[in-house]
Length: 175
Image (tube, rainbow, N blue to C red; front, side):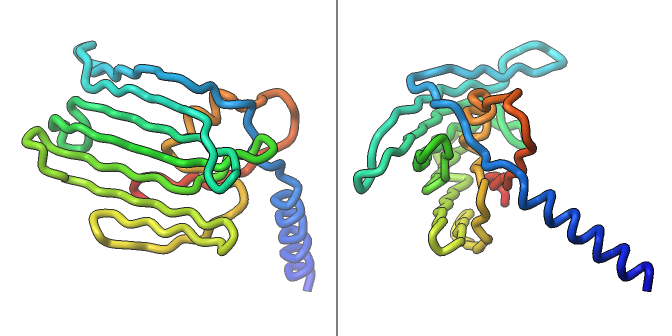
């Protein structure tokens, strides 16, 4: 009987701590362009590079960020030359950035598409549909869900030092 009470108390405390976690908010994300170069750690030579752009826009009268990344170089598990383009739309509301749609196309050196990814986020219905190379999976959309594409921008603009814990869900490009 004591074990059951102990489990119940731990469950209540764990649930309470998860419920008290803050909403993942960010300071305004800087718009404009940036360049990233990734280097091989053993040789110091460039492996790949990409350009990032972020603009503020609107859709159906609501504010959104539109992001785009164009990259090229040796990338992935097989370290082969690829090019890629990633686009994303994210709704902005009171410091909360909510994913709406992310698309990625990756091509090999010959221009053949080797990976196609589309993620649609529906916060109202609580679902994420992720289609990788024509194979779709559905996931639950939880409060504080963030997409891999925007993670660096959110963390760079996170108001650290304001107190409180923040729990979030990360949807990668390999969900």
